[in-house]
Length: 176
Image (cartoon, rainbow, N blue to C red):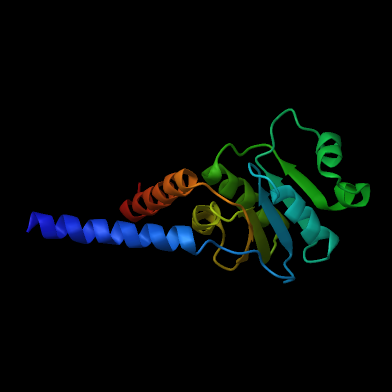
């Protein structure tokens, strides 16, 4: 009986990992949202947020998880952000240090500005956990569009992220 249970759990884990690794979230198209939230930490994320602003897919952008020492001018220079966007439309969030605090920072910003829809921008391999965390703290009336930045993650990166995703779901399910 123990072997059957173990085999069933192992099969579930293998199939879950295959789904997680083979069907990564994709970039969103030109869908309009009130605001966009970029979670820092990966290549192409900030650029995707700037693209969403520049193309008129969104009006405001929060860059969550910016290092304490980073200024708007440094960010603009590093990512070639036009001054017209920097002065009107971009907020730097300095409070987040991980995905859960990114979600909390984003939810506070969304609530403060009374946005009804957001574009969540992060790496494809990170999107499922980021979406899970943001769904836990955002008002249910706020619509979230996932806009994944395509990457080429290593198998090890996917393995770690899959287990973080499982752990977050278990922690939520247990109410911890």
